[in-house]
Image 1 (cartoon, rainbow, N blue to C red):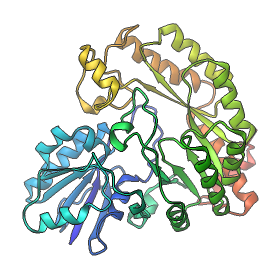
Image 2 (cartoon, helix red, strand yellow; image 1 turned 90 degrees about the vertical axis):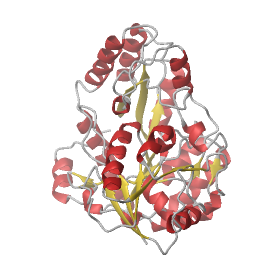
Image 3 (cartoon, one colour; image 1 turned 60 degrees about the vertical axis):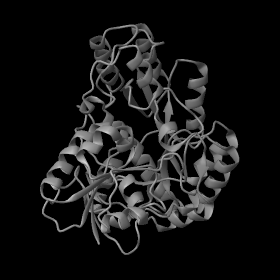
Length: 422
């Protein structure tokens, strides 16, 4: 049996960097398929879809709300040609009801241990419209190494630099943040993978640079310590979401190769200032994630926050506007209050205002979003700041003997210009 696995493209925001990361969801799903199934993978962000390929079943994996309309169009075209189409992934779960109109089957939940049943139904001509496994996650022990062999590696580089591989050591999240759908998607229980399975997957990844995509690493201190100790011998350099603010853990993270972290910056407090300083004390870079348009923010608050970001020595900043994604508390509240102005899912990209803010007009929030990007990157471009982070990690790799340049001329030229600076 052959499955044609597809990851739909989406339109990047103006000013976004042009690189594409290899998506994790599709290859994690592929790892849950029986070994007898042949899989071909197409990431439409880097290559065209072959609608004439001789597959038995088409599987469309969607992560973002901005992918769903394109995913539906792809499915409609395959079904017009007589193919059966199944959907899965995060945004399939967020937009399940609408997706059923474009699918032969919709899969909701985590795939491990569930695919034999669905493939048997397909072979028997009894494919169900919806397979809903969201109320019971499979045993975390069943999560195996992702099928990274499906990537076309040459398509995932930016100006000669190989992009990071994505990897996860846990699922679920004990937090329930207002704008986030993770509690709905993966449950409120933190589910760490067995450490021997984590080590097995790390050993299988050839790429020296990783993005650890766990929702947060700051979920269990003892687990973090064990994870970072086990990561040290691999000499990987990695990016992640928040790490526990604890000296021992930060030291272990630095030894394990922490490159930079995404840290929410939600106010101008000394707590946030010190949080960023402590990361830097351990040689860990910081990309601030800044959410604009919350009900407790006025225009003056946003301006003060942007000024604060210029003071605290962030390595990078990523600005988003509050977006009421389905199955979040924000969506429920705004829908009940009649504040959602736009239900075009292409616009749910965290860079376009689709609701009525409490303390300003939608147009003014959109202007402040643009102002935030322009102001923070006014003296040094986003690409330049990113390249400085890359050069720092390349120097660290040279020190520990793991550096593998894809574009030596580019790196030598950059080092020669002293782009790397503390």
